Image 1 (spheres, helix red, strand yellow):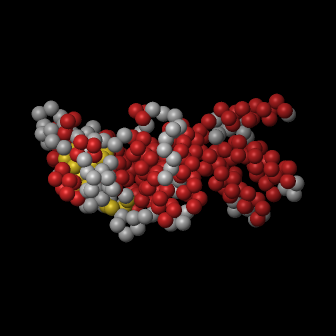
Image 2 (tube, rainbow, N blue to C red):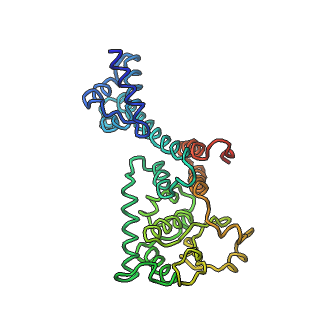
Image 3 (cartoon, rainbow, N blue to C red):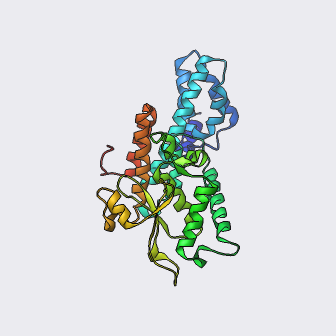
Length: 317
C-alpha cells in the first residue's frame, strides 16, 4: 500500500498545471469524497488532503457533493472546489511568470485573468468569440479582400464598425469600477468594459487578420493604433490612433497632447510591453475588487500578480 500511495502522489505531482491524476479511478475519488463527513478527524483530513492532490479530476465528484444532504460534506466539498480552482489558476500564472516576454500572449493571459471570476471558463469559448468577430470584419471588407488589399484607413474602418456597430462593444461609464470590466469573457458577454479590455479585444481580432494594430499605454487610459510602419507596401504609412472607450473615435497626436496630462508621443505611442499589459489588467481588476468589497478576489489577484511579475519586481501597490 505504501508503494501504491507513493505512486499516486507522483502521478499527481507530474500532472503539473492541471493538477490532474488520470490514474485515479472515479470509484476511489467517490470513496474519498464519502469520507469528508467521517466522524474521525484523521480520516476526514486524509481524504481532504488526497482530493486536493488529485486536483482537477476530483472536481466533478466534489461538485456533486456540494449539494449533499450532509452539511459537513457539503461545506467541505465546496471549500475543496474553491481551493482546487484557485490552485489551478495560480499554477497558470506561475507558468506565465517563467516565460520570457516574447513568449507571453495577451489573449491567453486575458483568458487566465477571466478565471478569477469564472474558474471553469474554457479558453476555446474566448477563442471562438474572437474568431467570430474576425470573420465579421473580413466580411465587412468585401468578398475576396484582405486588409493588405485596402488602404489602412479602410481596413481600420471595417474593424471599428464591426466592433462598435455589430458587436456593440463600448466603454462602461456606469459601473466602471466593477471587476467584470477586466474579464474578457464578461466584457464580450456584457458588451462593456475598460479601455484596455476593449483595446486588446480589437488587437486580438486584428491579429487574426494580419492587421498591424497594437495597444498603447497612454497615461490614465488605453488606446490602439494601426502601426503605419508595418503598413503593406505602397499603402499610406501614417499611424491611425483609436480611442475605444470613447465611442471608438479617432484621435490625433494633437488631441492627445491637449487632453492627456503627461503625454509624450515618443514614449506613449509605442506598443506597451506584453507583461506590462497583463499586469495592468490585473491591477485594474484588483483595484475594483477592493472598491466592491471583494477581499477574497483582491488577495487572489495579488498572489498571482506576484507570480507573473517575477522576482525583483516592484511590490503590488
